[in-house]
Image (cartoon, rainbow, N blue to C red; front, side, top):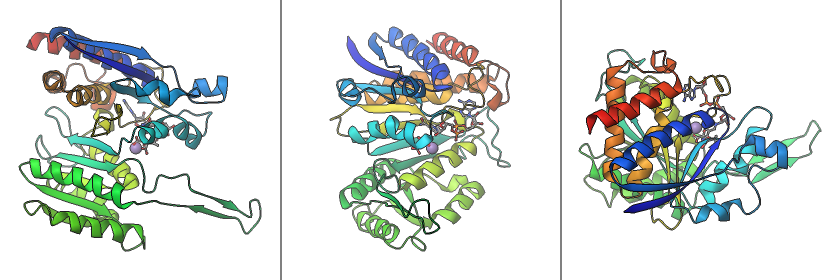
Length: 356
Ligand code: NAD
Ligand code: IPM
Ligand code: MN
């Protein structure tokens, strides 16, 4: 029997509401397919910070290292500054475990209404491949002349050759494996003098090795406009940490709701555990109301099982998501329905059981 040990970090806000639905679906499919999932729960969160002054205990990362994967809800809540909570938990996990690929699929499902006129299922179907451990996300910099009129704040970006090339290689490989073989790179090489022209030059160098892949390069400003104007143009999008973050909220928004979007933080060589979470955050505005959409989390769970080599589990979960969205009876408010978080989770379990 295949067996996996999963570290579960529900985190803050609706993270605590959507993770149980993810586990409900995982357990249903694991039992059907004879796979054993052992969960260890960690209550690390902003609440932990209020109690202990830390988002996770000392040695927290070492505790996670032995797991096969990490399943995370959301981090951050009013009361703790976001840069403190995120640099205390989510971002250190991505970095410590060299999860340099952030893979974020975007798809318009049958049964969901795109806010873009005339778009139907199949018109939006692409991946955002986001660099996940360097780039604009850095804590290098600081403040000088603090408190005076001459105050200066600097914030350093870091683009290494190794870090740039490995994310580009992953994106080119993905593009090469798809029918369209089309890669779009997001930069801003007209405004950012050093980092973005460098990224562009590495794209051009990598493109030499993938002659079948059609490559286009856009500045991020027109990229966002084009994504809204003609989402069907895109197949694999690659971007730096910040631009990938922006495009991976914009993309799902074009499919009707950001709340169905999953995020796989992958260490491709399996040296360290990878982490799976929804793209969305802790949604303080709706936390505690049992109305959060759990589909981003459930889709992330499917990606986790695929990463662990259980393709059948992935496919079964995805089929369940497609069935429930198409059926339309159990959708949460963000998708135009009235169902609760738990009712949608139950509907997924029922649909999966009915199909097998
Ligand atoms: P958010 O994604 O939490 O919420 C944005 C909007 O989308 C809100 O109106 C929210 O109600 C809605 N929404 C999000 N998820 C939903 C769901 N599953 N179902 C229905 N509606 C949903 O983004 P934000 O408001 O910018 O951030 C809130 C907090 O979460 C901040 O502390 C932020 O730093 C943090 N955050 C964490 C992560 C993460 O852990 N990976 C990601 C994004 C934001
Ligand atoms: C995401 C989030 C995080 C990010 C924040 C909360 C640091 O927006 O996972 O998309 O920017 O990576
Ligand atoms: Mn984001």
